[in-house]
Image 1 (cartoon, rainbow, N blue to C red):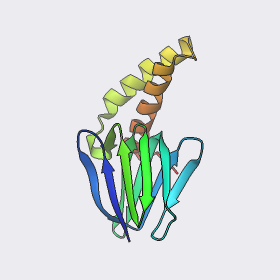
Image 2 (image 1 turned 90 degrees about the vertical axis):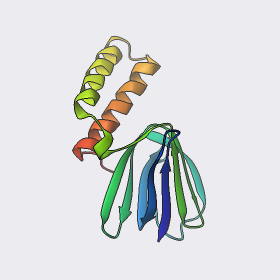
Image 3 (image 1 turned 120 degrees about the vertical axis):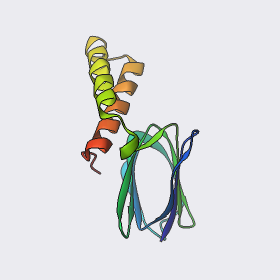
Length: 132
């Protein structure tokens, strides 16, 4: 069993046990952790992190940060982490629309690209469409 914490500057979004954690890392794609995994530190992509337990799973939108695995403990340190219930889908869709328009106007606009990634992650987690 893994000990898992999902932490942002505002709060501890999740603290508990899990059988597996799946997250997306920058340049490395999706990675899954189970008990006994080798130590690991990675940079999180803006996407979702899934905590799978014996009685179901929880999914969180994470907005950059780091993931660390050591001694059967997974820690996700994210700039922002939001559970499905915390996400305002209408607000996320409005942000997605605005960011999409900005990216269409200038596909090198780093801020707009980041806003689009964050909106997409929120919508995917809130609607259950995030897949690993």
